View 1 (cartoon, helix red, strand yellow):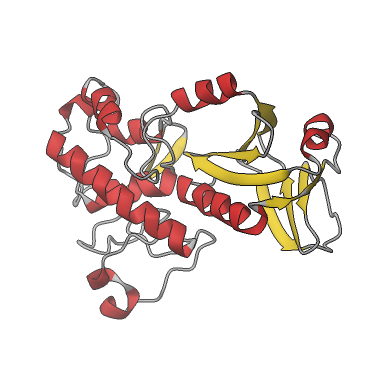
View 2 (cartoon, rainbow, N blue to C red; view 1 turned 90 degrees about the vertical axis):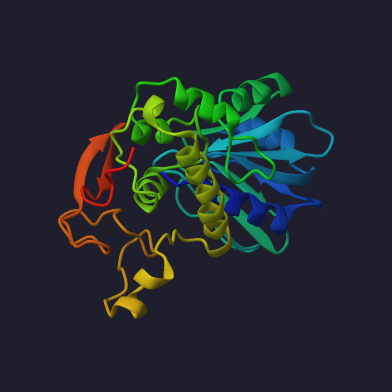
Length: 270
């Protein structure tokens, strides 16, 4: 499932391509016919992201399109004459640009009360400027649940996924099994501030890089990482390999229904 930086980057690309322009809206697959028809010929105002959700607003319409990609969804942007290929749930098109949405978990028009309810269910998003992380801290500080599980709970922190949770915990030496209530406020503040920096860089580059300069391939004389997710990381998908910092074997376990990766030597702190 894409992490929050991917959705924020996508929202920016959609706004850049279609913002302020009249768009043709259709549902070649037919599963979003009525909603797409209401949008056809309208001006797209902007696309915004919150956590792993994208909302698309149109001129003269209070409703917004809510898109959640889930595990299998994806957007593809291309030239305006791109032919429809495969099962396209929603197509946005101008004379020079096309955006095709395939396989999302959700693609629906939501009214203002529904949008408000959706946003109210989400925790603070590190990628929304000026966001107050205090609500997340209050949830964490009162919880017996592990910090590894809490970081994946979108009602606690919105947008953090499997890669960022593993990497930010490693970068701050936090044992992923630490109950939220045993985490210090100083450590939480450092985790949040680091997520803001790392995820903003992810929006800028389109990849997840978490390795400090002294541990990059050139500095260590090691091969660059080769992985579909791209980017240089410390522990994500490196189970059984030596930790880049201490040499211990990186471990893997299932936490919150996803694989968690950590270094048992570097991550002893609570």
